[in-house]
Image 1: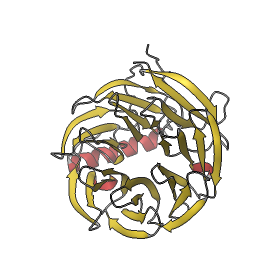
Image 2: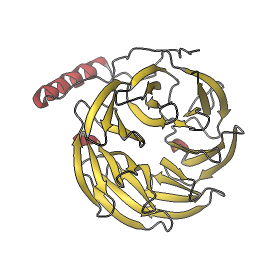
Image 3: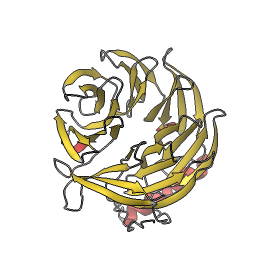
Length: 354
């Protein structure tokens, strides 16, 4: 069974004179650089999503913006960054109930749970710091300064280090996962997108949005050792890995594209269309299913068998549904949204239909 989610992008349209002017400027810039130009405002084709709604839970707080979410699959605990309320919401997805709300995290963007350490890490953009939380109690353990506008997070288990992407700061900050002490900062030479740790090589990968490239970082020497051009990608932001098949998936929010990168050859093997403004990615390794959630509320699902993913669904899921987390045990995917069925903030769960 497949469910066709109603089409309603919920995007903000520019006034026509501004849109015409902006389009003209973009065309001139694209002609000068030879770049591929794909407008953000183009409505993508719709394919029924291979998902069925499984549950919905009303969340506390107001209907302001949510950002990242991270799941401890062993305990069934989902941690959600409620950016607009400056708090992290902890949800028991097995019992479908809110466990606690952790406050005092100014403009919290990123959130990452590390089950082996029983720690949760959150980026507080309002104070330019990473906050370390006790997973069991929600208590604040450390507050660590970062670069400007910390956003995404990645964990390096080999060095027990958490890395923050400092978006406008154009850098990555490495922080000791146990003590909260800064181990070093790596300049990227451009605005930082998301990051991911590659266990096969022990390197950190980071999108460099304003250079349309992927930076490869040696965490031991705190240096960028390689820069990978991303042809056909405008403003790479989202990033996740298939560590088994050695693939990187990169969401290009400037032109609604998903790039598949072979981590052995550093070559782009495939380019797929997504919904407008793709943001958060989640990969379920069992069924080889990739989820691409977009700022526009569109969701794209892709089957990843080999180096050329196949789009299996693309439609508008819900306004504000730009975050996705997936449970590799149950294969459920979770989407915190500002407005659920009752108009209140909610966590919506979907189950694959095949």
